[in-house]
Each structure stands twice: as C-alpha cells, then as structure tokens.
Image (cartoon, rainbow, N blue to C red; front, side, top):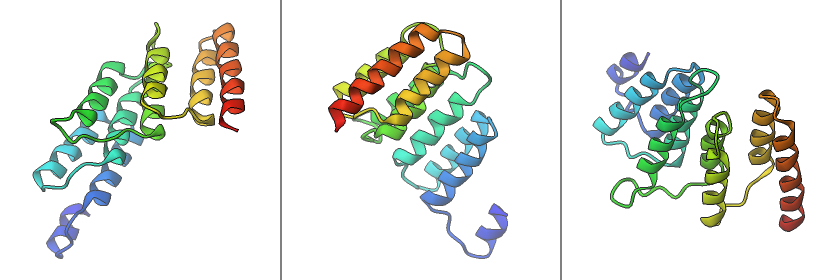
Length: 158
C-alpha cells in the first residue's frame, strides 16, 4: 500500500513513517522499524520524540529480555547535540525503562535517576513498568521498593 500511495501522489510524512515504525515495533521487528527510520531519513523526514520512542519500544519488544544496548543506543542517538537533539519526555523514558527493568543489574535505577536529573517526573506508568518487571521475575522486595517510591512520588507531585 505504501508504494501504491506514493504512486498516486501521496507524500509520506513523519506520521506515516512513525506509524510504519510503530507497526514493526509492535510486531517485535526491530530490523524493520530501523529500516523505516532509514527510509524516512532518506526521504528527508526529520525524526521527533515519537520516532525515537518507537524505536526504543521496538528494542524493548525483542524477546522476554528485550535489547537494552539497542534501546540505550537509540536513546543516546536521539539526544545527541550533534544529532537530532531530541528532548526526551516521560514516554521516551518509560520505553527505555521497560527494557531496562527486564534486565539484570541496576539499569532501571540508572535511567530513572537520569530521568529525574533531567527534570522529567516519573508518572504512574513509570512505576508500573518497574513494579511489573520485578513481579514477573519474582523479585517482590524490589517491587515493594518501587511501590514505596511511587507512593512518595505521588505525595511529592500533589
């Protein structure tokens, strides 16, 4: 349909490419999402925060663990001053946290700290991602820790 639309004179824009990347991300096809990103750049369509959030989500949807390195690479690429210079929002951080929380180690804490240092407030979804990942791996103590942090944050945000 993409070729047919172009044949009929439709000019794909950022929304078109982001939608195609999102379809690939939801299907767990990081390579296809990255291919659509490259096609968008080739068509001189500038990426935005939605573009990079989608690519990070595509990395997060790779198997049970996701691919933290790829997700972090997309985050860093988005926020480079010599690159697109995208200012991340809570949705972009949440996409990154969803893969970081599945990994072992302190990646989730590192990125939550990074988020807070950059003035982005965690929302209910942020803590839900962290609690869910802990519960799925049977780490109830850490899940309880994130629940307590969520309650403290809720009081701060009121």
